[in-house]
Image (cartoon, rainbow, N blue to C red; front, side, top):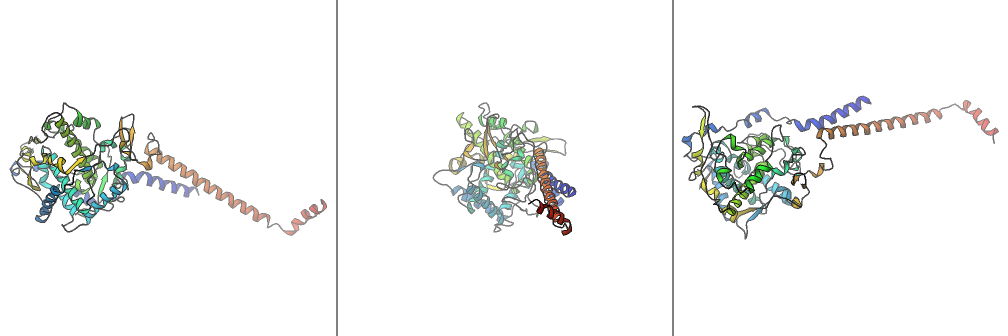
Length: 451
């Protein structure tokens, strides 16, 4: 019995603890594939004047058709993008269903979702990151993705994931509801639950995550507040990545890098990150921050369409150096979006005619959703997981595991003890009824004489 009990407890411990930290058999070949990261030292200045896109002609033409549909997709007023946790369950499931329909639509090979993911690869990275065009290029990219989804279901509007709400500074951020089966699926190892379970990319590698790795973090509430609302910060030069690593953390792109590393897995690798649908939710929030900054510029009398054309310049040695400034030239064609110039990404037309952002949930009702609560200590809304909300926030996860193990052990011990007790009672009854008749005669005579 004791051996059985020990075995059960040990198995339970392994399920509770190790399932959180292992990568569930991630294929080593896929790890090598993902680690084949783009190197910005490949951004040779001689390429800067040349349009580049790794897509086939068929894929490229589909992207252009998405753009043509996008600019015609206007209703009486712009559609509203909202934080994903304030969507109704029906709206959320409809959004996930549209993504899966893109994934299974092979009319554009290999499929429409992976075609969009392939845009964010190779030398396109030279002009889409570390400079002025980061903001505009990704704005166009998001619009094409949203348009593709709306081809599947016209009711879909791209939501955003405000990861500041999960940067709680109190509880472990990996407890966020975003990486549960009801939202994006599990956050550690291969994704095996939720709407994108068992997804594989064009290399047959599984969708994989490793959220909340040691040293990783989510967006800073203070820096986001500074970018959105501090009136002393109103020049686009102040919030784009162009000064190198020392100042990067204070820029929108520098803050954007943090959740990529925090989610990990495919999201942690620049050229594979769009393979995870978390990418588009995250970038929609980055676009939201930029839009809040643009609204501030308007209030302060600044032109949000002003484009500086700055890019990061890194120099290590004669053989290792790059200068991205020319890739971010305002009149350069956008890589993979040849019908546009870099400067076009800063146009007011996007949010004047196509979409706007609903403000992120805040006091007092935090969007009136069970997934967010107002925290008086932090003076802001924080994300919660209703399933685990009964557990006090001060209790560490491994203490919860210990409590569960001890509780189950006591229950098993009680069941075993009760079973032993019933067995002994049964044995005693059998013993009484197996007494011989000769032994019972004296008892019978004594009972008769007492009458």
